[in-house]
Length: 253
Image 1 (cartoon, one colour):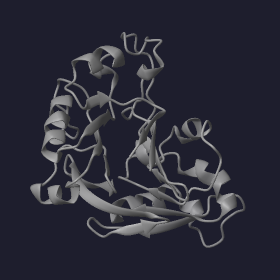
Image 2 (cartoon, helix red, strand yellow; image 1 turned 90 degrees about the vertical axis):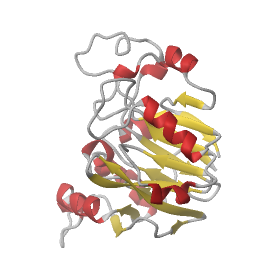
Image 3 (cartoon, rainbow, N blue to C red; image 1 turned 180 degrees about the horizontal axis):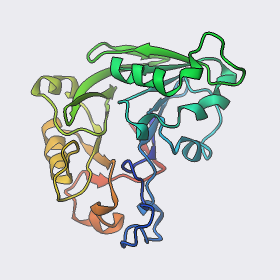
């Protein structure tokens, strides 16, 4: 199974518009972070996790082939704002999109023209499916277990796929979810920055502590803002097995 991290940045992306900090002015490609999204692929199945406003830019370098399903973590714009750009992939047929009840309702409101009784030609063909935590779903040859994490006070979804777990925008997680993460070897998890606590996102130290609880062999940090620091410098100081991810990174799971 191959994981491609299409985007690893927080809701504003990096560089931040108008910012003159050293991260936003960096020429290192690994300091350029679009909004979070990922591709999980096997030889026969291709699943997208989240479809944010940078989707078009992120997907252009990837081979053009069928997307078998889209997993939505939650309803916020930086994770759903690119849904209209899936239109070219609808030439392969309707695309199944999986979301929890709140995100499903948000999508109906965000893209009403896609679900109208009389749709005009060319709109994305979306099959919208409601999913719940701990209810396994299968897409192609992938078994996917949604788990629940808390984005502040909002319950959202993370996903366990084989030895991989993908979690973004988490602030806390209930102990009852940890059994669903047993045996995870590759953990992708959000880490906003090092200091200045946030009401709905965990920081780098929180992510490291969580990775130790899970026992993952390798942890990749995503959903980072420019305050996290320069990619090259930060990675030198992270503990073994933990690293800042970067846009376009490919991991074999």
